[in-house]
Image (spheres, rainbow, N blue to C red):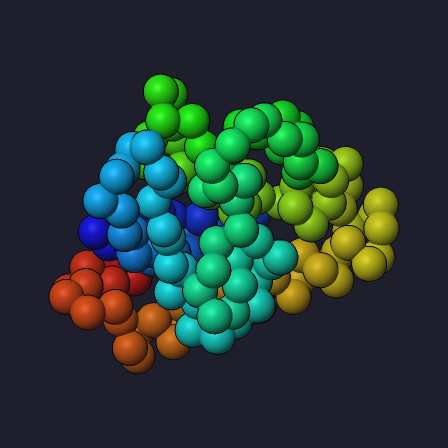
Length: 149
């Protein structure tokens, strides 16, 4: 399956399109799906690898863990985990300004110059990715991408 999500407002990912290919293993939901991110070889953040790997504890089978960027986050649990939960975590945790500034996004420019530079870099890379996507949209999504932008 292929899915797309829009970057949340008030983040450097705002209004960007983010495409993911999802492979549901034969024993799903007993095992988590495998997800590939269409990165256009851009290194947006530590949880979206330029080669397409999505690093999210929810995509691992096991017990609860704590992550600095979103507090307690469960690993995959066949009784309660689903694909909606995965994409909610991607949008609220991975595509978040809090990844760049764990203290929150308010006063970013004034609070810490390094954090502002990270934010600006991510915004620039997100914009580059959208240009690459316009030139080479994911297969069967050309009309969607062109219509969106």
